Image (cartoon, rainbow, N blue to C red; front, side, top):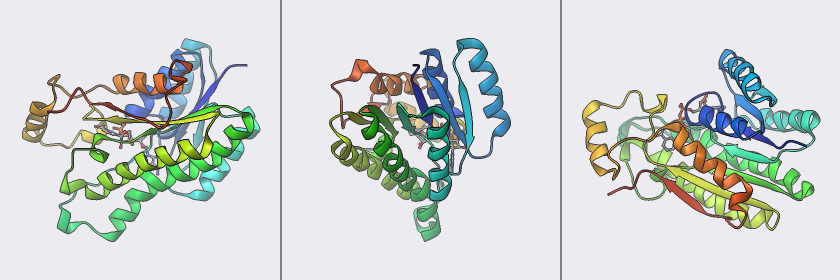
Length: 244
Ligand code: NAD
């Protein structure tokens, strides 16, 4: 029986690259999206034709617990199992530190941290029953060692996601592995609005002297989820080109 993966926010940027990487490796791909139904259908058509796998687009706003419960119920009815969960969906609100509101914090934490917790719980319990499974969380180097006052709540959410990784690795051991990828700067729509001089000065700190591409993150995610990483559990892999 073929394996499957659920990718949250799987229609664009890093999420799209992750969907493509698993499809390429023969996985059935369950692509969660919130608004981009056309993009999800396009990807389904393309990936099914190219790789002969099944793509199952599913709409859910990950910040809504009920929608997450319904999504997991629907997937379990359709597939009977979830082999890999990638908690990828994320938002960033760029604002000065002193302009940031409690609502900004709540919005950011809901998508970036609480949603991964809810999904980890829902899917992790199924994986324990299955006796196998792998979860990969997409954090950020902002959650480890690069901090920006203009994204204080984002940075906190990404640090929190690393804690969630450690704690859920313990909770669901021994048969379910939970790991984390912490990307540095990556060329996606999330960074479209960054001013040129900021991009230039950040690039100075990156040892390979460029931003990453979504595919470079997707390969690390696939590695951690795959059996090639069977002895890697509760770890955080920075994929940032080296930061100086
Ligand atoms: P992106 O903005 O292109 O993609 C984010 C995805 O999350 C989109 O598909 C969006 O629809 C989805 N999403 C947002 N809110 C959602 C919700 N409520 N319900 C369902 N889906 C929702 O950004 P990206 O760069 O591809 O980011 C993907 C992940 O990688 C995020 O968690 C981000 O924090 C992380 N990350 C990105 C970078 C970077 O430089 N681009 C660096 C480090 C970490």
